Length: 398
Image (cartoon, rainbow, N blue to C red; front, side, top):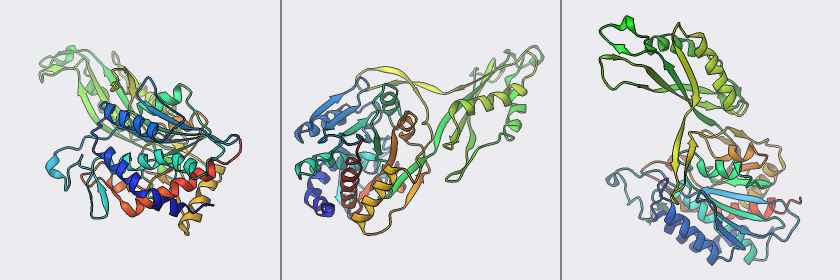
């Protein structure tokens, strides 16, 4: 294998400058236009064979392989979470400041610095006469932080490669599984009346007096990586704004964190069964998945779903084995495989048959915090790691 550490050193300054430029671009979910435009131009400047923007605003770049190898998608998201009050930051959230051995700013760890590495990975391989057999796509998706909307629709529309590498934080180790998330709405429907004559109505709160204790009997599934799935009531909303009315309906939100062995439809069915057992005369209940309208930066508005499917890939899969071996050859030490504790976009693609792993130099503890930053030593190692992975897995024959 070519010395990927040498190539990481050679291109380090250029990639770091790109990462800093990206951090300087505000791109809160729904406002990714400037970030998308920057990405398109960067890919074009680097000589990508194809660069396009799909109907959702996702940016898709392609560097074609020499032929006969597995195709791979490198996936990061264009959007970031809101930085909150600027005064809480040590360095400006959109400053892209390089100090104290780190790149600072919103999105540095989640996932802009990693995305800069991904964009350069196939370019470097091609320039250094290491073009692999398989096609390499590099994708920046929209609305990952809100609903996973970009990846969800890419997968649903059939944009599927043989392999995928998702750039969520793994500290230069390999991610092979992630929890899923679904927000379940339990809507109890009764009959409104004035609170002074409650006997003339049907109070949905009476349903929840039975349902919440019964929900404790829910039997979660277990997984050897994650333990048990969890369900947590988080919010309750009444149909009435006043305090002197029995509401016509009351809705409870349940945050459910799933393990890879269960499906969203199975979860909803089990909660529905418990809810139906708690009904009394005249009461109705609806159990659904929470959705919301998503407006993309290009004006497209469609329905998105809160949460992502769970995902897992076998540690014995050829993709995992090849990536792990490539990293260990570069780093000269063992590289652990591990699950993410949080939800990722991986499930959207793995559910459609794509073999997915995660790799990034970012640290989870920095994501979504006012200390959002990328350690520069880990960043350089991440360049070498991405090059090694791409050189290995994209040469696996079809």
